[in-house]
Length: 255
Image (cartoon, rainbow, N blue to C red; front, side, top):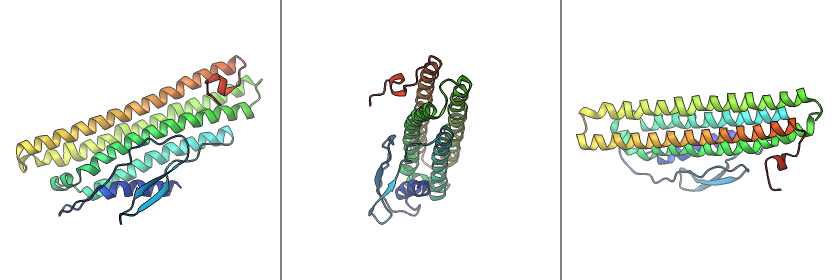
């Protein structure tokens, strides 16, 4: 399922790309935030037909260990999907000013994609963490305080710390830095002596603005998602310590 999703991500970006020799292509960016539930989205194909693909992984289920593995895989797959889409973008746009101008919408679409994927990942992780707590309640002896603490520590260490930090490093930090180096500080900076100044300045300024906005929005989505995980983790951990194991009641979730 994830292979199909990654191919579709590349296709969405690919549709916005046009050859440097000329030509136009109409595209629509799939910016909608992915929900926590599995759903299909219709996207245009290269031939202009419509095709659907399973965009969202199924909610995590199983033992606490299995749910942790599914959350980790979701982080890894989302991260790799964005980096693969970035690689495709670089190959298609090329390293010339004309190539950038002809495909500027595709560049902007990657920023939008990074935002929507980060928002979707954060939403899914919150729901999957709730499934994790329910699984802990179902499988761990409520009287075994050490086992309960170990289970809660696992989610904190492996997801709140490791998974979120790894995503931050790969996408917010390195992914956007590579985009900055490739276009703002690369292709566009190199065009200073070959493009009329006013055009060059406007193009370079616009690129910085969309890059900055996209990076800021990714940070907000990442930070909010991580904060939500911590807040609910803290509430559940405190409730377990007090002998309360009703997850819906602890988190005020309406059934």
